[in-house]
Length: 632
Image 1 (cartoon, rainbow, N blue to C red):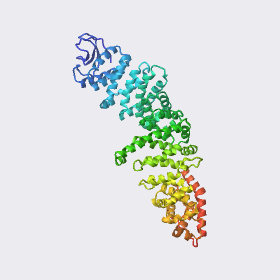
Image 2: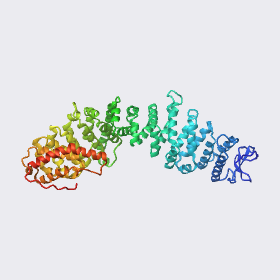
Image 3: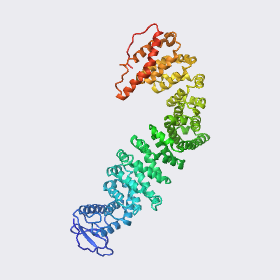
Image 4: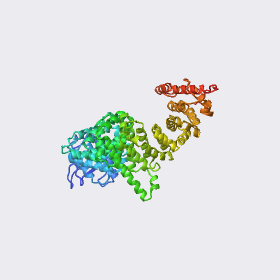
């Protein structure tokens, strides 16, 4: 395609065609010339007053003609004339037309005020989600991404802001979002973020660039929903750049919120969570944000959620976070703040008689923070030294116990169960000055509410805590006085592996004292233990070992197997003989590592106690039945 020097004199500026179907651009005013013919066989005759559809079609043909004639960018000699004409058409109030115009103008590589104006135009178009369909079909995204990667950050910061804003609006559309990923938008955005991060806080541009960073991080948050984008974020070192931005913009709540939202989303994935955990500066940044924005619930809850993910399975992350100055005090302060907010809300509901209404709702904002905060404490308590320190932290234990005191499991089950789980973790540690030990009887009183609840999860957590606390003589007395042991024995019928394990832990500790061993004869305890051994033994050697230890304690002063184990004697003999058969215990459905562990535990833990128990029963039994191998 070539441009001619043919002159025309037309009455209005705009786009016309001549009789040869050539394409004429007129920039003249009041009939002056400056009209140029560009041959294009694809165009149809029209005038400015024609329908918008025709104008859009003409712009499409114009773009194709310019592209095919290698006249995009700044190479076109009549570029200024073309741009003036196109800018005049912008005044026509039509988003489809403006979209076509914006694409052509951006393709002409405008700068300065022209660039700013066309980016504002693109922003206006993209802001209206009704335009998503036409945007998908017109490839405006390519032009905007090119602006991001080619324009000078400081010279065109305002234009980049509108450009980035337009892209952010596009990222709300699933089709455009996927297109962004395929066109390498993740790396482009991270490169732009790196440029912004290199601007010193003392620089005059620093503050204004915060607005650009808000749009950028909002777009990254949307991109984080896509698996391919998540991989690119990890490979491109996004964690480091996001942490730098967070560190520099701690006072910018909007930037902080979007970065935290990105981390919150991505920390649910193991690979990104590991990358974030390895970034040591993230812990001090999260603590700084929690201190600075303590009552900003939307920010706080996401940070606490991230910390919960980081400390879920990573001992190094637990250490790194806990060693940061003020980490525990920050968590305690948050706990107190949101506990008071929740307590006030509870009182208000009570005053207004709205308890039943509260039970039908999801956790409140305060409850949600407490749920996730207690999860962090539970995760931290798994680490031996941290768990011991938390067990001795009286304010932590007091707050956890207070949750059990005032919060009904019917109102917020997850919060109560999380508190009980954390207390259970802390009750494992026998340390000097343990707050759990100091409050063990009061904790036992609070656990009774859980045992009597309709929540099986609550019941299991309560029994687990009793499993640890029943190592203390006072708690065993409490269990006997309150007839809790009957409830624990009844739980053996639950046909639930976890429930049986927790119940057996309590019964094992009770049978340490010879005066309490006869309790197993009540409620059919011996038969229920034998049933659990049959139902779960081959699949859980830890539970099988626990049952055998309980029966070993119980039968210490045995004189007759029949009088000790009653009608369950023969069944128990058959079971023990079968479970001690090495061929029977091989579970080939497990992978090799797990199968080896399974066998090792059987050999070192279960087998010794089971053999001793079997020998004891046989030596006090007048008849040894033939062994019958049964399927488990």
